[in-house]
Image 1: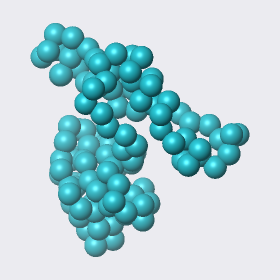
Image 2 (image 1 turned 120 degrees about the vertical axis):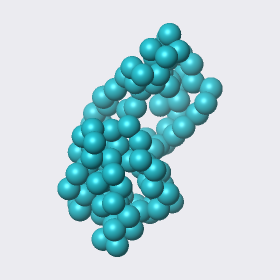
Image 3 (image 1 turned 90 degrees about the vertical axis):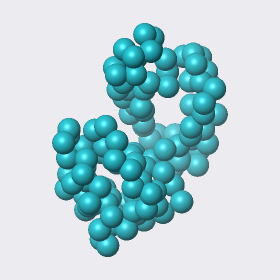
Image 4 (image 1 turned 180 degrees about the vertical axis):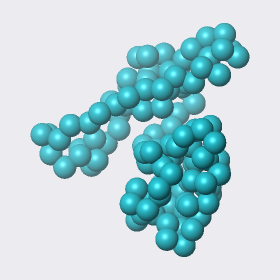
Length: 119
């Protein structure tokens, strides 16, 4: 079972959650979040979410999660340790990474940290 996060527009989280729990997709562990929905399932569930969710903008699979990442260097090391050769079929494939800063958390704590980003 893998963990996923599907992004959506503000206010559509409930709609996306209903789509994910439909028999067409069959996601489990559905939790509405800010601008998206967390869910779990097999790779087939992830693929069905990509194909059939009309309100999802993007479906992302969680590759790793660590609580001890506090610096840019530690974030880089975490990403470096991922089994990229298992995830990408050849060296000619490319990967796009974007980050979104969680301003709510940064403003409430008074500081920003690598854990505030989603890639």
